[in-house]
Image (cartoon, rainbow over all chains, first blue to last red; front, side, top):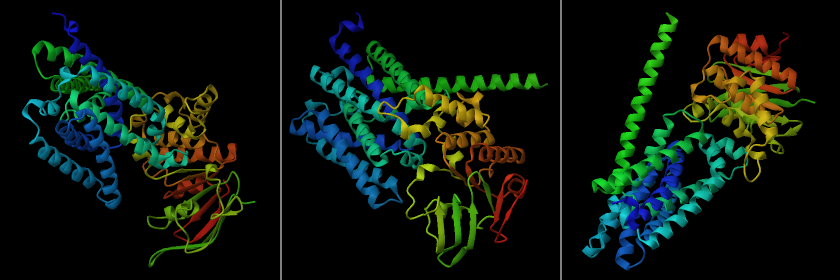
Length: 277
Length: 223
C-alpha cells in the first residue's frame, strides 16, 4: 500500500520536514560556536518535562519545552557563577534533568509509553501535535532568519560583533532559547536521545563541502531533509523506529561523504603530482 | 594636528615594568612600526591606545582628545594577533568575511545593496585579492589571509588601522609584501597605520617612523 495513503505517515512527513529544516540550522551554529554539548544537555533534560507532562496530565511536548527553557536559565546561572568552568553548568543540569526524569518516570502508568520519547515515535504524532510542532517550527524559522546575520558575526568574532553594534548577549540568549524550544518539540518525534545527533550530523556533512557560511547553512538543511525523507521511507517499509533510522541514515551518508571527499583529494593530489613531473 | 599623540606613557604589570616614558606623535597618513622583542610591550602599548589598558602614568590623545573622552571608535580598525587563527576553521568565503564588517550599516533585512557589494570588490582589489572573492578563507595562505583581514578593516574607511604583529605567521617575502601594501594604503588613502612587529627590515624598509621599545627610542625613517 502507498505510504502516503496512511494519515499518520502524512503527518509524520509534515512534522519530519518541518524539523528537518530547523534542527540543522540550529545545529550548524551550535557546532561553530563549539557548544554542541548544550544540545545533549537539553535533550536529556527535556525528558524530565515529558515525564512531568505524562504524570500530571498536560501535553508532554509543552512539558519538554518548559523543561528545556528552565534548563537554559539554569545553565546560564551556573556559568555566571563559574565562568572558568563553563562546561560544568551543562554537566550539572544534564545530571539533574536525567535524575528528575528517572524519578518521575517510575510513577508514570505503563500505558503512557514514556519510552517512546527516548527514541521518538514520529508515527504517533497526532493532529494536535502536528499543529503545535509546525506552528512553533515556523516561528523558530522566522526568528532564526531575522538574527542569522548577527549569529554569523557573533560566531565568527564576538568582539567585532560588539563593535558592529550587535547586541551579543541578547542574540546569544535568543539563540539558546530557540535551541531549547527546538529540542523540546523534537523530543517526541525524533527522540530525546537522538535529537542532538540530528543537530550535529547535517552540519558535519555540510562542512565537508567547504563552502561559505550561508551555503553551508543551506547544505545542512538539504542534508537534514534527505535524512528525514529517506529515514521515514526506510522506517515505514522495514518496520523500524523512525528517529533512530533517520539518524543512522545520516551517519551512513556522513561516512560516504567523507570517503568521497578523501578519494577526490587523493585523485587531485595524484593529478597534481603527474602535472609537476 | 597629530592623529595619535602618546606622551610619557609608562605601564607596569604589578611589579613588572613594561613601558617607561614612551612618547611619540603620529600624523595623518603616517605608517608607524612598533618594534621590539617578545615582552618588550608592543601589544601592551597597542592595548593602551585602544583603551583596553590604562597607563600607569602619561597621556594618550586620539584626534586631539584624551582617551577617556574619545568616543569615535568606528574611526579605528584593529587587527589582533589571533585574528587569523580565530577565523581559520570557520566556513566562510572571502566575500562574506569582508562584508561582515558592513554589518553596522545594514538595514533591518541585512542584505547588502549594490553599492556595498561594490565596496567589498574595491577593497579586495586594493589588497590584490579580488580574484579570491568566492574562495573559502580557510583555504588561503597566511599572507593571503592577512590581506583579506586587512580588506575587512579597510571596508569601513577607518582613519586609523592598528595591527598587532601582522607578519608573525608569514614568511619573509609575504611579510615584505604586506608591509609594502600597508605603506601604499597609508600614502594613497591617507590612513594612519600602526603595526607592531619583530622585523627590523620590514619596519625600517617601509615605515615612516619606528618606535623601538628595546632601545627605548624612536626614529623617523626616510625611504
